[in-house]
Length: 293
Image (cartoon, rainbow, N blue to C red; front, top):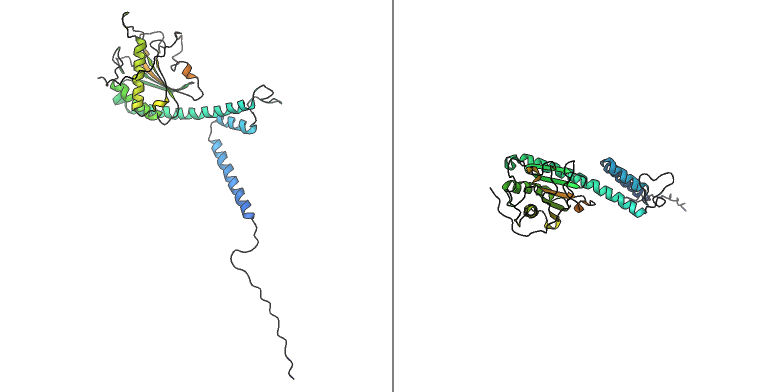
C-alpha cells in the first residue's frame, strides 16, 4: 500500500488595484487650509492697496463690529459715550464710500483735464477749471475775458466752444453714478430798468442750455439733480462784479453723502461773498438754440 504525500497549503495574497485603501479625508482638510490661506493672502494684498484712511476705517470696524470708533478707549465704548453702535457702523461705511468716490472723482478729473488740453485747437482760449472740492467734483467753464466765449452778450444762444467743451466733459461724467447740479452765473451788468428779462432769467436759460448739451451727449436726464440760475449773486471775482470771469457755467457732482445741493455749487475764491439768497428758476423745456458763430 502506497503512502500518499500531503500537498503543501499555498496561501495567495491578492493586492487590490486602483485607488482603494483607507486614506481617509485628510486631503480635504489640507485643501481647505490652502484655500483659506490664499483667501487671507488676497485680502491682505487688497487692504494694503487702500489708502491710510480707508485701512483705518476697515481696521476699526473689524476690531469691534459692534461699534468701534477711533477715540474709544480706556474702557469707553460707543454705548457709554451715548452713541448707538449701528450709527457708528453706518459712519464707517459712509467713510469708505466717500473715499471710494473721491478716488473716482480724482481719476475723472484727470481724464477731463487731459481731454480739454488735447483739444485746445477747438476750445481756443476758453478756461476750464476742474477740481475735487469738499462738496464733490466741480467743473467751471469760465469766460476768458477776451470776448463772449460761450454765449453772445445778453443771450443764452450756445456757441460752438461751449458745445464742444461740455460734450468732452460729459464723456467722463457718464460712467460715474453721482447726480449733477448745473449752475448759470452772470456778471453784474444790468438790463434796462423796464426790461422783463433780467440776469435771473439769463443765468437760468444758460444753465438749461448746458443741461440740454449734457443730455444730448448721453448724460442720463434722471441724474440731473438741479438747474440753478444764480444771476450775479456768486461772483468769482467779488472785487470786480463786472469782470468777464464772473460769467460762467458750473457743473457739480456732489458726494453721495454731501449736502451741497442745499448751497451753491460754486465755493468761489477767498473773500466776502454776497449774502443775497440764490434764486432757483424752474427748468425750461424749450428746444436747444443752434450754436452761434
